Amino acid sequence: MLRYSSGKAKLKHIVMEEELEPHDTKTETVLSPPEHSSPQQEALYNNAEEADLVFSASCLTTAELQQHWRAVKQEFRSVKLLFDIPNTRIIDQTMSKYVVYQIVVIRSGSYDCERVAIERRYSDFLHLHQELLVDFNEEMEDIVMPKKKMRGNFSEENIAERRVALRDYLTQLYSLRCVRKSQAFQAFFTHQELKDAYNLLRGGRFSRALEGLQKALVLQEKLSSHDPILVIPTLCAILVCQRDLEDFDAAFQTGRRALPTVRRYELRQYQGPLLEALVDLGYSLELPVAQLQDELTRVRDSPHAQVSQMSLKELVVQEFV
Image 1 (cartoon, one colour):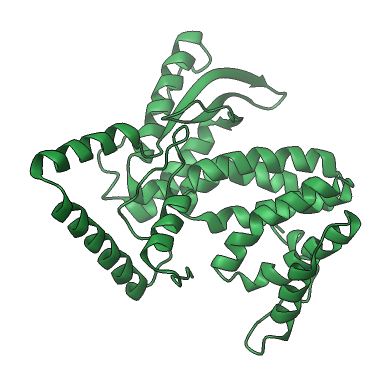
Image 2 (cartoon, helix red, strand yellow):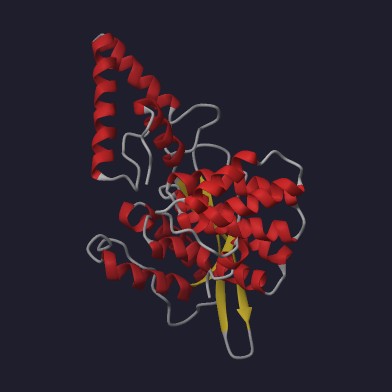
């Protein structure tokens, strides 16, 4: 749960940090409460926003206020995603033949240097569509899943036509707020990559596991900016791989990246193991870790805390079992 201990300014900073990505060097503004806020917190947020807007309006003339909002619209952009299917390939096996579509998720509004590609079959799209219809049948009444042709599925013309249709289908799904925030939509882009990476991790193949986890993390960060909690298991798994590969500095930085979200949302399952891992890494790197050690002691000694007794690695390997 979010903490609103330092008033309106800090609250607005937290919302901006979680909901939007800065465009160039500018900060973006969001006029909606955080995803996990309680009714009391939402009321606090709304009151703070209302007070801020009243103050602004009282200090500006109508013309100045209109000019101010025009500037805001020019300088601030919300984060949106684009979907592309640039390539396809035919898999011709002994017992089956099918087409896989390469999907790229692109963050609009600024140059996106982190573009990773995943591959999905038509059957994967069909499975996604059926899952979404269970919960969002009414919302998706105008969205049509491209149908499978009875003949000519492997002709260049039909593959090109379907590639465009599936790209447009993903764009339509993303346009629905309820769909793009759903677990099924998120899982379509990351579940297989994460499952493969965790299997590699459990098998001790840390280099290959790390590649898959980092790829999945890029997609998760683009698709789940509304819920920063979703990336915590992936960040912790990346830390474990980096530590076992003896890249202690990278592992420490990954842990420090995850810790603020773990604290903010009071993720007790991860807080103790993550702090313990950071303290051990800090000692290995000869870094000052007294504050982390004190925090770990407080977490362990808290009478109301349900602290995990497992190590971070033991916690991580339980994912996708």
